[in-house]
Image (cartoon, rainbow, N blue to C red; front, side):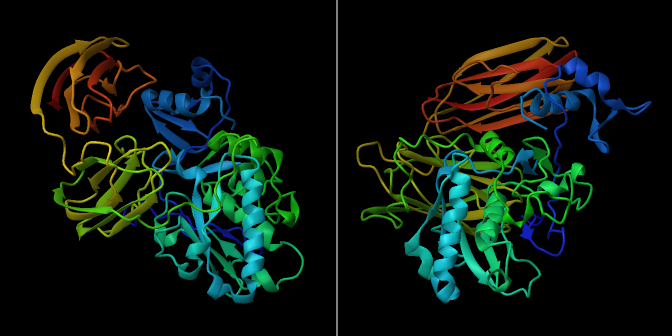
Length: 504
């Protein structure tokens, strides 16, 4: 959303190193790895008389607690120092379901006689990434006739543009909304002689669609710096497909994937599937709702910072699950199959300004339930128009939380620095809200997990904030009937827990 961030519009140009709008989000550059916490802490500069640590030359981290979190996320996880875009301190990437079905259309009418050339270049460019990582670009030929930025049947569209050589082509990052998820190709891509070829250009651009930033923004390039809102996946690679040659690059305008590009792609998406496995379909089936579609409507409100959850809906794999949201304010729509969505785990999240958002996606194989969540970026009213093929072998779904008994409990306690206090199991009802609000003194950290007791590395919610004011608001996942709570003392602390949930 514009009020939350301006997503960088990645451009490939032969004339400069700049890009368009810059992501206004925090990001972190990974330093050395293979270091213990003590070794890492000993080499980090602490400004005299303060708790401000300096990392990556000129970036600040306030407090040892946040420095430890930085170490755990980036130094101790074994990843190298290709680079990935960062949004809200998270990698900007497709989730495990989305990465295997990145659908697109190519505007056949708009490209005219160039359509075949674009198709060949897209196929070759997509294959380059598919050969090194577990991703699949899927051309949906049936959508070529209506291939615009408003086509919700595909993840992105490929269209021509005439910007008089301001750029050769431009793409997008995964977190962007559907309207800006497009690959645009300027006329100069077809009229210029020599390198780069259209296939080379699109290899670079599809790298952006997977979340990869320009390699030359790294300080090792010595020029063309853009910003520090990224996380490295490999050592610096001057020959990377994502490195402009004119920015001290060594790969030339052939823009081929290097061994480090492959290494970085696999670090983010995993190795490509074995050639013995069945190939991905050329396009998802069906692309429109099947006969017998069920339609449901939900009208509700959500407070700023609040959330409303709906489901499960009994769905049929291979059919289309469609949700169209309208209303007022700025609610955000989330859809997920098999479990309730969270702010970081979802299969569809348009994340646009205002209330007009749409998710229309194929139900993955093996998934029989769908869940919805609406988060309030501002106080909002909304209507959900839900269309799907209902499975007849399961219990009817309902767009409201299952009936149960609302429960509330309060716990007071204390914990020593480094100590832990555990509570549970708490019997809960799948599909309902489980909320824990913590207050107190000192710096206790709240952990919540379903199905088993949480640990410092395994949990469903961990706000991890300074002080005692922390909140976890979650939807109980399908198949889960027990919740566990843990409080860990970052410092010696006292705490009060208010726990609200629904009991079967």
